[in-house]
Image 1 (cartoon, rainbow, N blue to C red):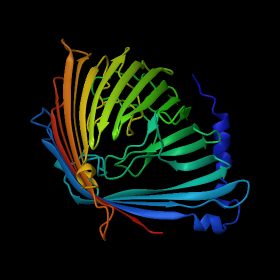
Image 2 (image 1 turned 60 degrees about the vertical axis):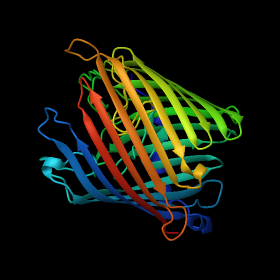
Image 3 (image 1 turned 180 degrees about the vertical axis):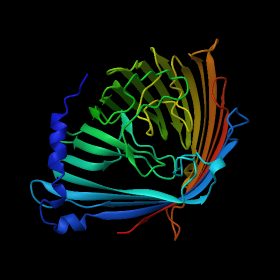
Image 4 (image 1 turned 90 degrees about the vertical axis):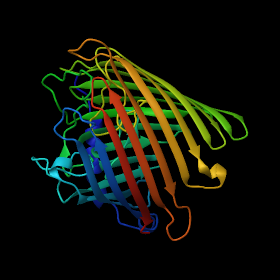
Length: 419
């Protein structure tokens, strides 16, 4: 079906004038803030002797992420502007080791020496309602930016958010382009379709219109629920429901339940048809966190979402999301915050997910896979190196229908406020 986006398009046109409307004043300047993040990223992915001609992908790069946010001008409607600058610089790579997703490549897969982009966002605020037009980095259930590499992916569009009612957040917006995490260019949006998702897109392989709408409501301090709609024009429609409950059960103890259901159907020539159910339960005591989860795919295809971003599946891990057609997967996870031992800033996460019952077209028997992840992170809490962070991420993947992978990422980051 064709989405009726006249209202959102009108917001886009109106928002184009925000940057020149109204004089700059004290609030606009005094409430502004700027920061730069320096991110040094090394990644090694070993393909474990797969049939691919590339034995491994290994790259090292330096990233610069500059963010500026102005305040709002005074008056019934306040105006402002945000800016984002992204730059990635190659430190080590080669044509035969490229493809980690941290460096841009040319048509011959040669990694470029540097790449980047800049984005501006005009914004307006009236009461507790804001409108942003331009560069966006949404993190809502139906569309999520990905920030797992050197630079994040970003989107272009308009986003209206209202918090007029206490405890209720409403969102409405439209996106027309995305910029991948390893690219300088804006492109039309496509559906992630690797693995055994078995999605047939027909004649419509990309779209310049993604519409989202929905809201999140906090019923009580312990219970939060949300519903969101997301539609990639001509490809799929999606309805996302989430319910989170946190039960305090004693001193430094809690039990969290996270239930998610997503219904995806085709919107035109594709065959998208998927039900995704996920349940995640976490028991915390002191610095320990113990998690168990179950995720199930059903329908004629796997899970659909915009390529280059993240999704809301509970088993979205470092490499896989276990969203293939008919896949069932189980998760066990352990977290520890070393602040409980007097070492604030140090944390550990390890998890294991196994999936089976995958419908792999063209072969007999079910598809099976598993992934094991371990993260160790430390952020300096005080002194001249405050906010310096070091993270080591390791993942192992084994599959009878996809690639076997061993992967390590080393990330050194430092965020410095400019004012």
